[in-house]
Image 1: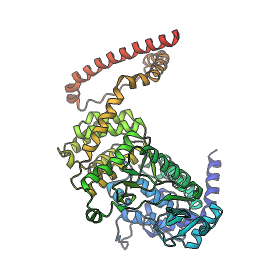
Image 2: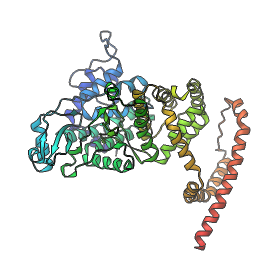
Image 3: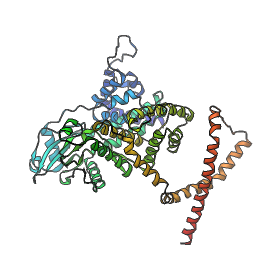
Image 4: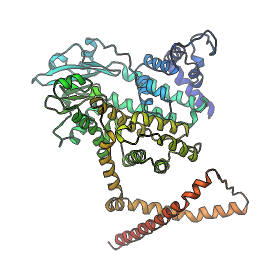
Length: 530
């Protein structure tokens, strides 16, 4: 079986030999020798490898800088991988996170003839027939595609985004290579086993698949248009489906002042304090009230129109948010504001984020240390720096959070940065507080508890059915002398100090459990009588 797996892997490597060799050459160029070993790429070296550690090798750039430059040279897929990794402070140290946020792919535009060929292939007609005008110079160039200003035959101003030829095929090949490298890294890389690398690659694959499909981007734009339809101060561009395919998307053009251009906003007499509240508030509303959120709150993606409306663009990168993750965010914010270490650890336990390799005592000690240094005023509490410290603790204590949690927190951090760019005195936590309070109230109101009641009853029933067998196994283990009990008495004084509080919690928990069981019995009786 093992030989068959190795043979399959070798066939895949042979199919992508040229790309493997290119990747290896780039890693050598930027002196990332350790990665070559970890990823199992030694056999793809195009020349004799100079082992690391030679005294004549002096590095001009740091390792994090060299990693960024290597990813940029390797192109779209690896740039996107780096951008996603920049949200994963549980995996990488802060210097790598900061460097990867600067990632940009090679942004050379493709020639106009190539753009026109893609439009003709996708839409079945040349650009000259579809559009009254089409600007040859792109408005912007990204790693996957580029955008051109155009005008429809009825005079409507639009932006036409065209995917670069060959990008999809290159991404598909690179993702297959990344999957193989993730397996090698988990097997050979020291300390890499604690991270779900294959899951991380699938997260990258899902993000890239979404960005490569302009139909999906169009549906996302329409989703946000419906979500904000009752807010006249928000403008989501219309999608023109007759000029949209998986590789071409045509959207209404948003005209306004970019939130990057603070001087122009001042010249136009906009109230930047009010804009900061509304701009960051867009993301607070998406995260706390919607099922998806725009995952790239870069100032260049938000425009202030002449009538004061907020024009949001670029719906390629979308994050998902559910009640579990939303509840984690609320608990995290509340714990940070209240400096409540126990609440934060409870949230991590509920998410299943504390691994066997982690120590709750070590985690508690680290969290108490960093929370003790948090500023007392919420306007001085900065997500960028404070979350950086928090994620360093997460990484050190082997805490594994779901990938979408990090994207969400990264997005909220960027939203705070957007608000503070417009207004240096912007208090993001004051903006968050009402939404967080609302979520907490909704979670514990009677109707919400009743909605969760059937699943709670089912879980209790399954646990009760399996309990006798578990007890029998425990008793047999005791009789055979196989039961081992480990006790850690470190910090016993603290445990004794809190024992009374825990007992009180347990009593309250028993009362609540009794109420739930009573409700469950009543609920089942009602169902049976019906």
